[in-house]
Length: 208
Image (tube, rainbow, N blue to C red; front, side, top):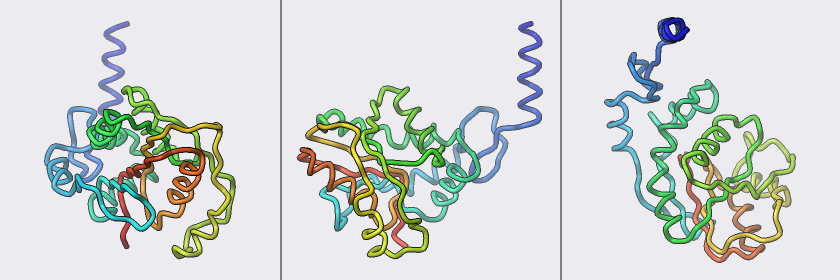
């Protein structure tokens, strides 16, 4: 039986070889990104806070462009779910620094269709980062194609809380921030419910 399992695994590996999510280079391990692409991505990582009109603290890991844009497209729309390991590793130090300072992690509301972000949240939780899913989003007008002002108007009143009390210090975690409409509505609601400090952390910031 053991020999059969090993042989079956070899067959699966042969039929579906693991490739780098960026350059498609064949890899012997289950990593999502090959070492050379990982090194290139590390140079693109921001590692700093940025100013944003809506948030007191805003920490995007990357700008949403070039390699990171392709990586997130692969993650969100092409079922490259092993990229959750890469993004979790990229988030680890930032999230841990906030946890050490007494912050709780709260996930931005997402639909079941965003299975990649849900997979990342689940993996982070598995690795010891408690992810609180306090926020839910009611159905609202499709935001695709709307400008910033239209998105801000469309999102009003659609964010709800599943709890009556929230932590004083919160890290709001999301995948991609474009206009910031959803995160802005979440932040306003969390402050209204008693939060005193909120940092917004995202995988990528689309400044286009």
